[in-house]
Amino acid sequence: MTVTRPTSVAEVTADLAREGVRARAGGTDLSACLETGVIAPGPLVDLLDVPGLDGVTWNADGSARVGAMTTVATVAADPRLATAYPALAATARALATPQVRGVATVGGNLLQRNRCAYLRNPAFDCFQTGGDTCPARTGDHLRGVVVDQGPCAAPHPSSLAMAFLVYEATAHLERASATALPVADLYDGTDPTRDHVLDARSLMTAVELPVPVAGERAAYRRATGRSRAEWPLVEAVVRVECADGGRGPVERAAVAVGGVARTPLRLEALAETLVGAEPGRDLPVRVTEALSDLADLCSPLPATGYKVPLLQGTVRDVVETVLGITGR
Ligand SMILES: Cc1cc2nc3c(=O)[nH]c(=O)nc-3n(C[C@H](O)[C@H](O)[C@H](O)COP(=O)(O)OP(=O)(O)OC[C@H]3O[C@@H](n4cnc5c(N)ncnc54)[C@H](O)[C@@H]3O)c2cc1C
Ligand code: SF4
Image (cartoon, rainbow, N blue to C red; front, side, top):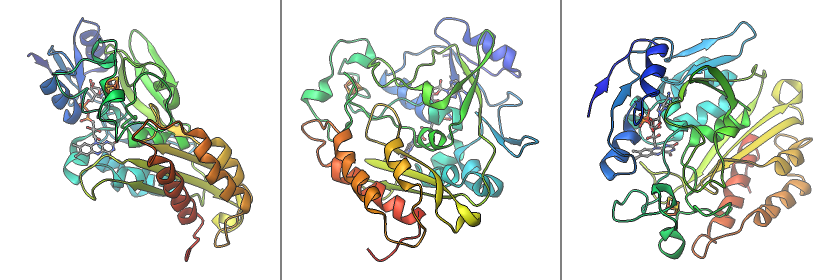
């Protein structure tokens, strides 16, 4: 397998324009995909030496642009990012392991393949490998979706995608020409053949965040089958903007969940009920009702019914945490 190490974005896009060529960032998922046949062997373009893809830059209006080659560890440890975008920092701190976070990149995280055991086993064919069936649906789908959007039943694996969703962040791409796409539009839950909409010719260069809000409160929670080195069964992130510099009632809120659907999901209806809620006080009845209504979103597979209460409980936990509600 040949590996090129271009030193400019133009060289990368020229390389990626050739058939079968793939970008390599940290390589943590790509290597596993190549080993298990999820991705066919072919020439690789290593992004490590390309200037301008790594690191966080701050715009004059206070907003940040996170380079696609910035590691998850850098996002997790950057104090200015933690103040400006606490939901993103909290999510980055919680995912994978220190070793993985040290090499895994923002772009690679958003564009990684799902963790379905059938996809990662070369003995099986499925929609994602050019077949016309989903063995997980009739086999082991314990970790599968509970919001069933289409033929593929594997939840989207990217925790950062969920966090970028609550900021309505934008992914910057280079192909023949530069373009930008809301992070939310990187994913199409009804397409069973792939985990994101980009083809291998597109290079993600950065993710752009909006102007930060002073005094934002945020929290992240995940429910996992084991405590370390594991993708979550369900994860949730909430950010709220409160009056009086963070101490007053909620003025705006955003909630997103992962591990439950083919795409990371924003929970708009629940977020609306949070407006007016007061930090440190009991949850308003309308919020409790909206948490209960999350069951209506769900269409569990035979073995994923357990994710309905897990989703409700995880989201309730993160909502209570963000509002500083204790003692339930
Ligand atoms: C034990 C363990 C636990 C984990 N837990 C979690 C978790 O809880 N949450 C979570 O989100 N992830 C988790 N992960 C996955 C990990 O975060 C990903 O493997 C990692 O983020 C991928 O990033 P990378 O830079 O290594 O990407 P690579 O493996 O290099 O690339 C992944 C894919 O993205 C493409 N790509 C990469 N960068 C670009 C770019 N700039 N432009 C275009 N295409 C690009 C590559 O071609 C490839 O197809 C876990 C991994 C392990 C091993
Ligand atoms: S859930 Fe998706 S990835 Fe897993 S076997 Fe079915 S189609 Fe393939």
